[in-house]
Length: 196
Length: 283
Image (cartoon, rainbow over all chains, first blue to last red; front, top):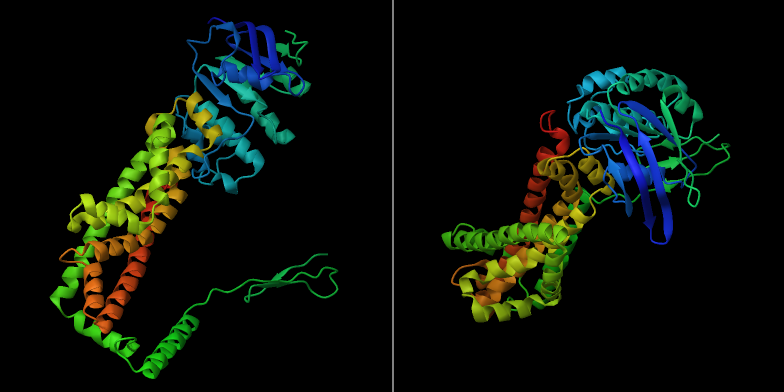
């Protein structure tokens, strides 16, 4: 499978330059961790890769044949749906909601709605939704946010399995997470010193 | 340590010595016996005033009105007039609601449609009902006038509510739907409908009251052969004060009944179509 190659990506919002001539290669399959300080353009980068934002300049190759799946920084759950319905709302090509939620330790919370779940449980439902959907390109924007150490440890093996089959991008501030999961590391710094 | 006790009289308080004094009294909604007593009070006032005036032309007593109503409800004429008004106002309301929802969707998704309809909606909202009725009488037969007037009352309210509901749909969920390639139906069902639902219920229940009052006003002006508004006008022209009060009472009672019925149907309909009732396949 061909890697995802970004060449000379630039993006500004008004006068604020967020990305300037950014280039990187993300192996496929494999997990690339993107690290950088706040405001460095990490989220803008993944929004470009998910086609939620159009870059001002630059090219991306290897993305057209991929079906993306995502865990956003926010959980973005449907308040009217149960945990199981939320997990399966996007599709179940990657496995049933019950399977993934059980693996996330939420087997006994399938019928609960988001307002009855703790922040950590909601996060796991959001992760389960991305895994249920399947796809061959998984974007994880701080997926462990709000999870305790034990829960993190139980989810790490799942991501290790997934990265063997598809391209995975992990945005994290935690070097330990990056070290535990990443095959490649990309550091991104705020403009004017965007590095590769 | 803060300790809050909840008691049945809606008062929360702290035990002495807790260091915090916290007391909240919430206003109770008058219910049952209180409502009955206040209605009785105003009926007595009405009865006393009527007896003092001693003129059936100026003010009839509540007893006379109820006696006249009792006579009327056993006549076919009464029910034909009531159902004719209900049909006209119902038709105008449903037509206005349907077109308003459609227009709201168009305005939300196509800014050009929003710009096109905006002045029209502003003019309809700003024009007094009486002006609308008199203008409409030039073009529309008296029988259909109330349908048109009700349509004009409901249409802008529904258009704006639906438009607002769609525009206020959760942007983050819409992005999620884009990435996960939701079908249009799934987007409507899981994102737009939950966003529109509360505003739609409010708009539909509010506009029925407007529609009813404007529809009756339309009948009073247009004076079709049948209709509650026409009977109200006749009562006024022929100085039949008991009938005037009686038909007014009928209008009030029907207005209350229709509003309650519409609200009940909307709540029931909303509960049954709420997305959380959707099964796995539907989600």
